[in-house]
Amino acid sequence: MAKGHACVLGATGQVGRAAVRALVADGWEVTAATRRGGRDGTWPTEVRSVAVDRNEEGALAAALGDGCDVLVDIVAYDGAHGRQVTGLADRIGSAVVISSGAVYEDERGRSFDTQDEPDGFPAYPVPIPESWRTVSPGDGSYGTRKVALERELLAAGETLPTTVVRAGAIHGLHSPGPRELWFVKRALDGRPVRVLSYDGASRFHPVHADNLGELIRLAAANPGSRVLNGADPQAPTVAEIGRAIDAVLGVESETVLFEGPPEGTVGLTPWTAPRPVVYDMTAAERELGYRPLVSYEESLPATVEWLAGQLAVRDWREAFPGLVKYQVDFFDYAAEDAWLAARA
Image 1 (tube, rainbow, N blue to C red):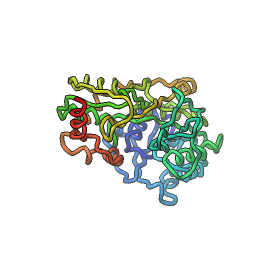
Image 2: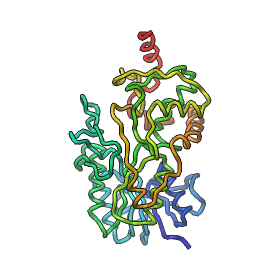
Image 3: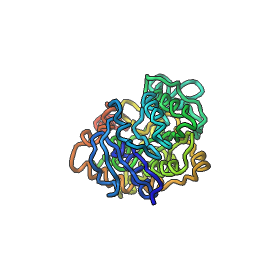
Image 4: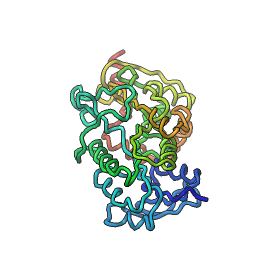
């Protein structure tokens, strides 16, 4: 007998796929809701699919039909989405909603929103607990919109028990913006050297999609009104990530480190930051009995194989639009060579 009916909104995304698999394996009857409908090849055969554009008036309510025991919302981004979910509280038993670690700000009011300002990168505690201060809710940025979403959901309280998961830097298969590409492409291109700023010590806490799927599974089975961080068991430095990827590929690269910020694109990686971003996972362990399914290093072989396969058939810009949006040429080898020659 099924545990109940779960609806996953955003089911073909990186986290949505993991959530669907985890819930089915745990005995839930799952409806996978996507904008285009149709099936995804990673879903178990018993998953029901439905097309829904949440921005169309009444579309989500219609997709829910008679309702569900738990709504897993991967693609909620602002206060309006929060109100949309709470407005369906009479049809939903509980909810699990993905937010972001981008909501936090430091004691000086610095956050991801200020990182491009002089000395604007936040100085967070290590690790960051869920009780730490956040930016103010609003429509001005990704972080402020996520806070507005959280406030709407948590205000519902017992009317709609909602677990908000503040995800770290999501990685794994099917990522639209895989940070690991920075190292993988260099290795496959035969680059003998990589240059890292801040002495390669930058730490931006990752979370594998399967670990988020496990958090979602546990929260679905244990409804409550709560906020939890979502991160891997370790937060490796960017230099450690490079060594781990080299080990998977069986190559040896020379790493050149320098103090201070990147010089243009030289030394710049998708993890680069002057101060660490590390999330505290003790609340998830305490409240849900959470244990990660996979460590960062354990997950790398599958990710690297997938990335190599993508690069074999198309340009990285076409394959990974999530990286292109940063408008940075992460593979400006000419700039790196000029920088290295100037140091010789």
